[in-house]
Image (cartoon, rainbow, N blue to C red; front, side, top):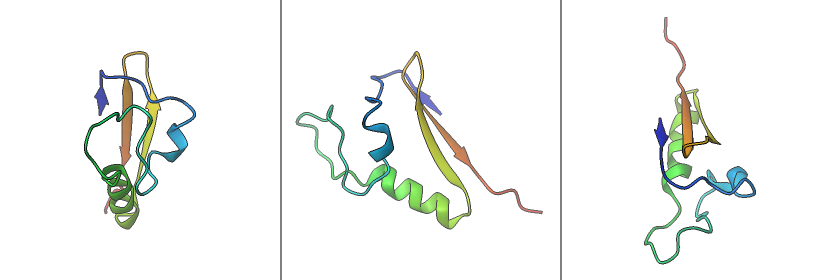
Length: 69
């Protein structure tokens, strides 16, 4: 999954899955910094994971799901 918005500053990438973490680009936008934390926790409970990286066009999220069977 990708977006075409602003990249995340590389110094902040390691923190975006922390609870209550809000990046430097949030300005006055409402939020609690829980969305990506909850996503990461759900993926861990499903024995999967979620990763993020900046791309030339924005930000890319990779979701890893355990294969059953």
